[in-house]
Image 1: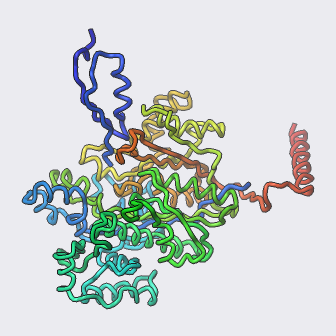
Image 2 (image 1 turned 135 degrees about the vertical axis):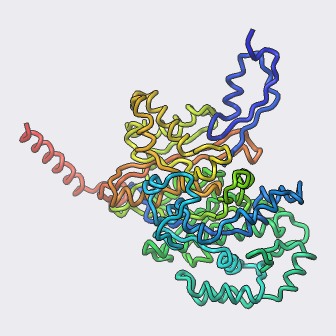
Image 3 (image 1 turned 180 degrees about the vertical axis):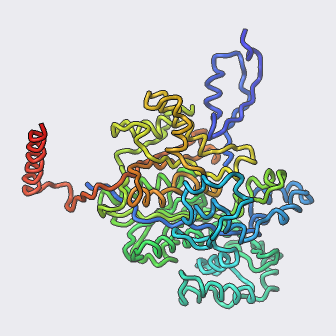
Length: 43
Length: 513
């Protein structure tokens, strides 16, 4: 049982920090469902 | 083939206080969604004066009157400290006031779309006549101006984009077509701004580096705007339009796009074009974006600060044939974020920094200065975006530790020694790698440095065509002074000379033993 099981996840990534697709990759082997993922540029 | 060199650079800022309110997207969006907003009412109270903008340390660095190292001596925040002996003009360029720039928009307008008030025109003509870079022939393009009632009519009845100065209507940019959205007044306004600010940067590049404008063969424009009509939205091209205004009669050119990464893409392209012998002198140039004025204004106002995004940025760099003096562009040490690279910070930094170093057998510490995203942290930190250059340097240092090229305890000193504080305005493409090129030319010639890496990154996902981001990098290196005078062919004389040199080396080695 992972802390992400059954959880719906919203990802807001940062181009100069951790981008959305990298976080999605980390969640692939968990029970989380990524319902929204985006990367933003804050500069 | 001999590497190309960076022969000169020009950098300009344009102080545009009225354009923050009327043309910055944070403010125009607010007006659209919440016209009575308190924020909009507060914008004028939080707008700096021209003198404050000149006295602002990061701006003095941008135009070359202070060095990035000197900026370290100013304690943050920087906006509440004035630089002593600050000057509108610097060794790389200038900070131009808004009224003169509106005049430049008119002078850069090839289709009589910019209409200026008669009195305003007379006042601007007088000021620009004293400016060192404008000739009487150029000032003729300001024309005589129009009656204000005529301008009001264009704005109220014909969808013209209004031009304000000191809160008053002083002119407008007319639409160029009744229904074509790509030729409406708003698009033409932004395009004329990027063109005119590019022209100013180009003029400073030429004037400050003893260059004959007729020697320029090719221009690469690398901003983030697009010009075209309804049949070809980004048909182009700003490059040739700018070349025409500055009098580069022997040049043609094209536009390169890649969000904030475009200037570094353009630098690599220019180096390749010169190194291959296609052209001798290539200029990369970009003007500024009014859309980004006051982008973080809400946070600045909330924190009681002045709105610091009050200037447009522009730059121009000349890449020429190897002169044996200026720093070379190592086209064999180029990094690139490819489609398959992935988006983790480690993968990104490996592709942009480590990969080109590995090609040259270099360590992370062999690069004296990294020029990354050089955004001014005075602007970004209060808005929650952190210190962008510092974050980049920490990632480069972390990779150095991982590659066993740097001790973990030296992380902080690496950031200081191989990094710089950010000084560039948040104008998208303007802060990305290129702000240091002018200083790099000095540090790698008269200074004590040997290598710098220029890194550009771009947020391609903002265009909604891909989720990818992008980045490229190139190493600039101190010139060895040895210049190949002929093509790749090696003459019999040269072979003899190489053998003689090798034998001398061998003999001195034996003598040494």
